[in-house]
Length: 89
Image (cartoon, rainbow, N blue to C red):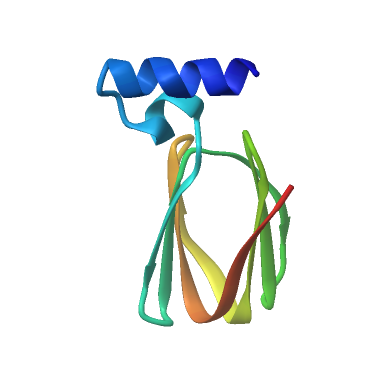
């Protein structure tokens, strides 16, 4: 319910939902790069799977030869041969 109120307030104030609700923003470039904003922490890191915790979900990136190119407290870039990106509740 609180999320719905925040979503309505964000809409009325013309604030992007990802900013107001802390939703992750995921940008996939081809099969080589995944750029992620608004994540909380790295849950696990393996060459074939990287799991991240965001405020509202868990993000799972699967593929081959995955590596974290860089990360800050706000965003990160994952490179390698991306097979899939999925979100779990």
